[in-house]
Image 1: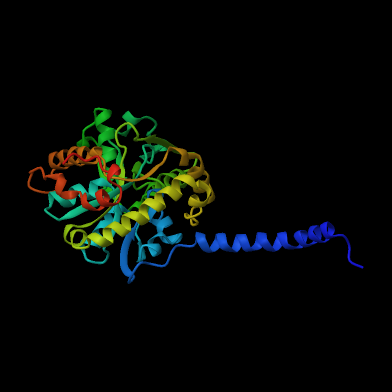
Image 2: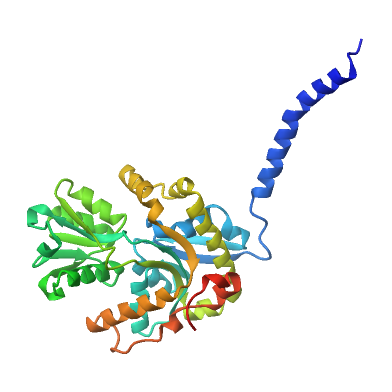
Length: 342
């Protein structure tokens, strides 16, 4: 004999609710997937400093399908510095690169057409100098007369020389030795140099290479670098639709890096345990965002004066750095993110 109708309805609902929940999850997962690309897929070669935290928006855009959603097949090429990444672009090996401001300045001084489509990251405590205590490097002033390893033509060199200037030391009062970023820790450990200047994660690597014998000085008072995405003027200006797609993907990537810190740090899976701890501690101080700020132009001009004074590139003439910034793309995608005066 059948039971009362209310009892039957209760049993039916109890059985149906789990099925409805599973269906809801399935619908949510389908909705969360990136939409199919609008139109044909465009291949884009991106030279990326993949170990540097500033590349997070690019890595997130690739790993979480934001490029794919825009119809971009992003092929990431790993390099150990922004300088090397930009050189890949200038040599035609890549279409866009992640790069700090200094290589853009030096390229502009050499009349190479490089344009920044957006700044994607800013941090104040990412550059510095590591010295060997057993070589007498215990204070900033004690760098006088020392051999210092650095990657010439990068933000590492600019930070070092600005830092020395704060100590009223002239570049001639130290000896600079040029190394690739990933060679600095070894040079310091072998004693080829008394100190070395660079950026994270290489600063942490240098400190560990001479564990217990390291003095570290950060350059936050002299350099708060902007990390950017840039390409040649010819490529960028001839692909306006692609630049808009790239910028939309990067905006989503920057939002992910800002709002999902634990998942964002997982993008740097090759980081050592100590580097992972450093990232977790420092993450709150990182600024991820896709912008073109007036400060960028001011920084490019300041750095150009430094480069001209030190005869690092060019004929001594100051470029018009408005030519080194591509405004049309970001103005079309996120106009409020553009504060460059033009």
